Image (tube, rainbow, N blue to C red; front, side, top):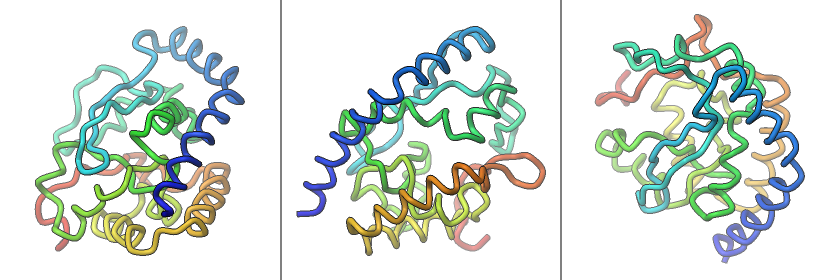
Amino acid sequence: MYPTLKRILDAVGSLVVLLLLAPLLVLVALLVLLVDGRPVFFRQVRPGLDEKPFLMVKFRTMSAAPVADDGDESARVTKLGKMLRRTSIDELPSLWNIACGDMSFVGPRPLLVAYLGIYSQRHSQRHAVRPGLTGLAQVAGRNLLPWKERLDLDAEYLEKQSFLLDITILGVTIVEVFRRRGIEQADGSTMARLKPGYESD
């Protein structure tokens, strides 16, 4: 029952927010175009509900510089991109993914397709629901959490999901966005890539 209600709320809510934020979205798109050039949007295939791939959309925040050997992409983030990430504005185009049914407001964050063969059996259950714009792991520490703890929280969300939990996560997310915490490590790097054996790290 709740998954059906949640999908209706996601569809209506995302369209309303897109309409309200349309002027901001246009302004940011122009800024990215003028400051960092094309493309304005970052598009990448991510696994969604039941591991079905979809094209996730965000504002582009990185240059075309090569990725570091450990997968850290912090050196590629542009000055404008850092500002967009710290304010979470880069995530706003993903509202379109919510409207289309690829994502939800709340759920496990959509990660890389390459991670599908790395998850433990419990953690692979994260794809039993639509990925979210925010989630339990995001309000508990975002990129500062170790991978196992982060994925444990995703699994916990599946076990406890409810309307009240979703409202709580959305409320805490708004607070965390204004606090701008948990986006970068102390050295300025973002979350390292998930690797086999992550549960014992």
